Length: 271
Image 1 (cartoon, rainbow, N blue to C red):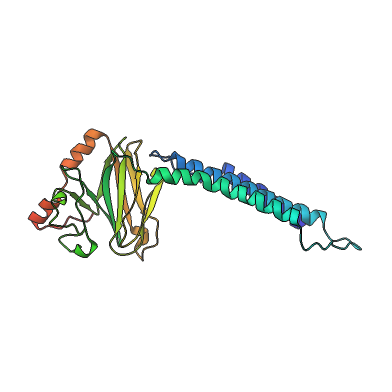
Image 2 (cartoon, rainbow, N blue to C red):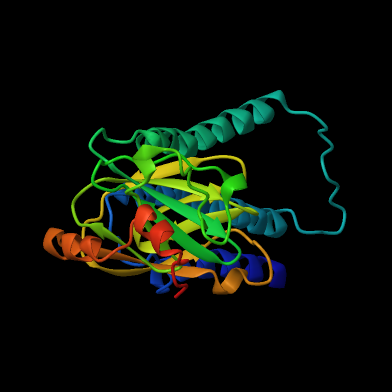
């Protein structure tokens, strides 16, 4: 009987913890409410299955507890039971995966009017590159990374000469406009993650990954690395500031271009 009570307590306590605890998401600050909805569906399905299984086990422990003279019925196979278990499991898995496939399609389908912003991860800081007046990012190559060219930009690519370089500082983006985050790592695996945006993506050396989002409220949001990348991983943090259009343009005018950086012979200060 003690085992039965413990199992019932685990089931009830798990449901109450989910419903009453304050651990749920931070307030959302982008268009990715779909992410929250998908995770909520997953919680409902897995939570129902978990509760049902625990309560069923409690019932079995109570219903088929040992009694003198009772013998268990031996039934090694049950086609009917196997069919229903496989069917219900398949339906449950499909119900969890299907919404995610639609959301993933939206997640990687970038609007045509999105502005590209490159994020470069390296042990243990974030760097950013924004397009200049021509609206295009120049090409880059990890092998070209050096002390005076920290992001490895191609010096012979005219499209990148007016690119804006921000090393170890704050990234600013305007509110209400879609942004494509182009992600690149120059050393090990990293993961660019802003909890309030509900958007994250691995950064794999030798690959370029991406996602997009549209900021929906102004504010300052912390950037985290969500992939263990070495001893300095906990300190690999940055900042994304969502500005009004006027504030964004004012900030943009104060930033240094790649050409200016090379002409001055200075490496951008690390904040």
